[in-house]
Length: 470
Image (cartoon, rainbow, N blue to C red; front, side, top):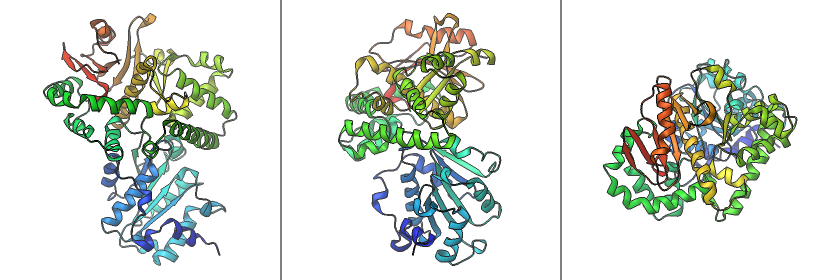
């Protein structure tokens, strides 16, 4: 007869075998795994947050594998998912599952634990009142470490900011950066060499200090040059397929793009966003996503978008915020020290993964006319990831009249870094005019240019190829 315990035993096969099945674990780990591992000894709840298909579930199983190899008793690791029908077909709660676990598996009351028990919950946002249950167990100070995942920042924290304030740490998992893609490529595609190039890159981020970053690369220019052709080939592949790790399990770009689109639309849109926010017109939400893909990087007024799509201003604003919370769309405000101008100015919209953009537009190969837009989107995504990690903001800048522009403005609170993306063979002096105008207007220091191949530094301005940016 079906019981909660029998369902849990099927999900937690390491209770019997002592190890995680290899089918659940990639041949390599994302760099974020180390951030997760560092949090395991802390009592605070750990949330792994990111869009669908980026490998959150795999990361959770890799974490379980790490715990078991470190000597954690198999029975002291409990895993279940919020969308597991065998557990949640009836009105079961997290409390019911933990009661069955302590009674039938631990055979020990949770309050009597002398060793830490790890409770790993995937897709937790599908469980009713999960915030209250976790708060209740956390505040009892049991020796339980909760590790949870969710597919959207808003899903995960909707209604939880107050109840879990001071109780939760977050690790964001986004589509692979090129730096991470290179690691997966060497493991799954072989050939070597790409990791050799990545090892030559400075130990700090381009966005920390572009000039120092460029100068460090120039000091090793002969070694970098030796890797250029291979790195360029792999980077072009990245611009086409993007950063979803499951690509490496596919041998057909067309099938991969079809699978990615169906997963994002069917589950990401119609299940997650529509279900959580009770969207009244899901077809318009889907249409808006395709519109952003086709017009990525273009400035838009919400009022104009509403008129184009035949909906009202507030619906456009809401729908875009939902897509942003699900990590599908990036939204950049125009940079200004005047908040009123920021609100009134047009927004720039981006699909946050180049592979998703290409899949939505049915583009199975890179076209020269689209490369600049794709590269700019990649640069914006890299800047957004850096800013999120450091609690900064990312904007663009357009002077009055639009005669001078800067693609990316990284607002570091006490300073602003203007960055242009010029994905072409040669960068001219005129290409720096937007940065100069920004620096003159806001009293900023020199900016930076993300290029296709040019590596240089002059007049305080760094020029670094996109495939070297980390």
